Length: 159
Ligand SMILES: CC(C)(COP(=O)(O)OP(=O)(O)OC[C@H]1O[C@@H](n2cnc3c(N)ncnc32)[C@H](O)[C@@H]1OP(=O)(O)O)[C@@H](O)C(=O)NCCC(=O)NCCS
Image (cartoon, rainbow, N blue to C red; front, top):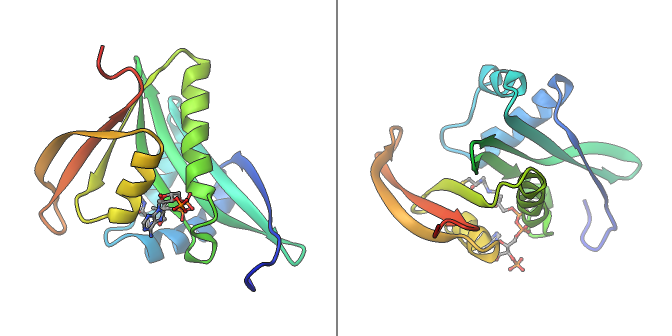
């Protein structure tokens, strides 16, 4: 996409037809990318919310990013979030995080939580901008690198 070009965005439910594009974004985004099977499993779980952002450029619609979160009891728990390198720093992840908050609020869920690699400063900045604060740390949480996870919360986590 050339810089300054207008893009049209819409958000949709994820479906299996999106998975090839999603897996390409997944591989460019994570050192331990999810497999196709992991996405298919999420699509089958009733309390998992799986959304994609599609971007239209030059008349062609492509997956630009996605979010997966669970709503269980009184918590929304972020499971996966990524935006294609081509579409980063345009507010897409911020919008997806806003949707998680709004969808959860729609069923009276005010607490949101997530784990993030301690070194992932881009994601940590994003989550801070979305109102999350660090409330805990799990050493060696990520088995591929032994890296610690920060546990972040937003909403009525003080209760
Ligand atoms: C983290 C990620 C999802 C952000 O997506 P994005 O669509 O580019 O983010 P946004 O444009 O919505 O950014 C919103 C805010 O997040 C912060 N942010 C995003 N990317 C950042 C970066 N590279 N460096 C610092 N802050 C960043 C900024 O505060 C930004 O606001 P600003 O643009 O007004 O400064 C994206 O970089 C990504 O897919 N990374 C790889 C996968 C990943 O780490 N996922 C999270 C796993 S926990």
